[in-house]
Image (cartoon, rainbow, N blue to C red; front, top):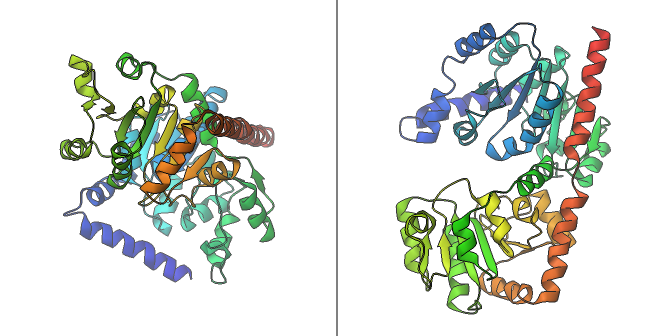
Length: 422
């Protein structure tokens, strides 16, 4: 099995190399890993050798948001540590390469025996945190052999994953390389426990702590406040064309005339926004234009044509629709729930623990089509069902907070033990 794993890793690297000539993401993936040894050595030479290092690895941007509360809490509690942050995907690295709390941000090299050995020889971290889905055999076995404390946080496990298949022995051994695994839910805890793993804890999702902090510090936008006025607002975040078709249908049919809508598309290229504007049956305006000249008095749909506002926009909403559920999977549902907004999303949500649990507790709804969306909206525009759903969303956040504190207590105990033994 290890032979097949090594072969698969190298074939993946070859495929990226072949695609890099005509695919921008593949090109960024390849170029970002060039001369990584030289760059890592330069970093180590530029910082005091006696300063300890926390290395946190996240696959992409979503996983970074789960690791971010740990970095922030860790930096406050252990300011002498240097923070090294790595990504596997360009979508994470390109956005967070200048993250202010990290002393060094880089791509994770391909998981080969030589790469993992050299990376750890140069970096020499004192503590390592992997986030959610990252299971790289050579890096983790090297860390285990070197007795470097290594944690997995915000993990989710399902019976169909390779770890729990008859042929998954190699990957089950990877899990034993972690000194402790913090899972998001009891289902994952019970699954690991059934397979003999004992160094586990059901801590919840660190993003809950993160979105609570964002909600408490939410930015105010005068243009948005003026647009909203006293009207109830549906905020549609990270929408794709399939999501927008449902919103257009609702505006064409049963949308109450006193409601206003804010749409933050996932893709904000000029042509994408023009396509959305052409489909809308009511007057719309763009945020960038409204900033300059205001908005038409009959504007009912405000289109957010920038990135970075969405997490604070939910403060102005009454109901949230989260995009992506008709594609690869839904986007962030916790941000609107932090403002006690009922949440609606498409059918592809089952790999997202928070979405499954939100539906189970009554704080969210999944829809299959435009008809189902109209039905849910008809319920939520009535006060009693709305308040019940909003309360369920608020209770979900309150019940699931505290993952960061639990993980940090474990980290602090580990560091103190290391100091006592040194």
